[in-house]
Amino acid sequence: MRAFRWKHAIATKIPYLVLAAVLVYVNNHAQVKTGSPYTHQPLQYLMVKGEAIWRYLALLTGMVKGSPMYDPPWLGGLHAPLDLAGVLLPFVILGFAFWRRLRALTLGAAWLFVLLIPVLAFPLMTYMADRYLYAPSLGFCWIIAAGILYLGGRMRSEGGRVMATALTTALALTFFVVRTERYESVWGVPQKLWAYAHQRSHDVRATSNLAQALYVNRHYAEAEQLYQTILYTNTVEAWTGIACVYFNTGRYGDAKDAMDRAVLAMGRRRPSQQADVLYLRGQIEWPFDRAAAIRDWEEALRLDPKHERAKASLSAPDKAPSRL
Image (tube, rainbow, N blue to C red; front, side, top):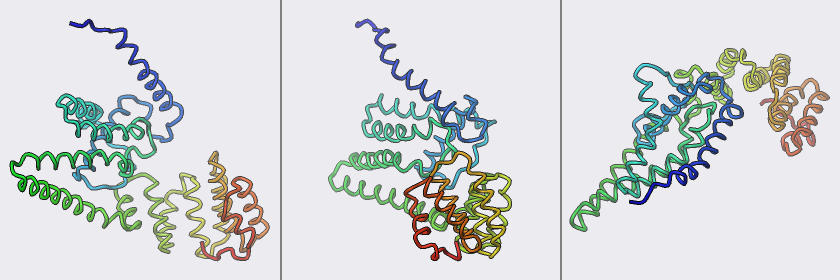
């Protein structure tokens, strides 16, 4: 029997150790942008990521309805061991597939879980989201296709194989078309989507997005009520949102005051984002203080020389809109 080369085994794991150290450092110093306490508590962090894995698999298989997920999951009770088991699930599936030499399952699951690593390794603002599955879902489709071919291949006759393959394909297609149609009734209309999210989430982003959808549809009174409930967050989005409502309802002084608060709330945002805020303040200032509007547009261009809307406003200021 060949002797086990333990030195070689340990040496080959060193790159993984280095990678793990980098991930831990980035997790704790660079990527923590959410205020949720679980981001600095290892056990709770693993539970949240395990919950995310279960939800991703449930979404892929059509077992749950897609919806915006803003609030961190509840951790405790019977959920704790199940959530922790979710962290091990990818390794169990891949290990089983590799052990049984199921090539399609191995490759499909590897594609799925490897492409989920970026959203599982870091504490993102949204702990899980349907959009994170766009690329990983190709691995799931690969597994489904391989399963259909496997079932068809178990038929003895050529005609039986064709019929079984066609039938299972039609069943899978019908199931996912029906699920998609049900999603579309909510996801296809922004106001419905964010009303749905607002009813189920305590996160201010759901409220802000619903207010924005109402504003776009010119339901200014309802949008203003929602924006008023999140002004305590002192965010750019809250102040610019209510400023636009004020402007479009003729309250120019209130709109200007709100935009001044938005500028103060910019903090360390990227120059292009600061330019957007200054450009919008210029739009609001134009009807009653054109010199201030021009100063804001010029500052927006200084921060972002490629800001096309600021360029257009400075080149043809008389075309500034009366409605935002």
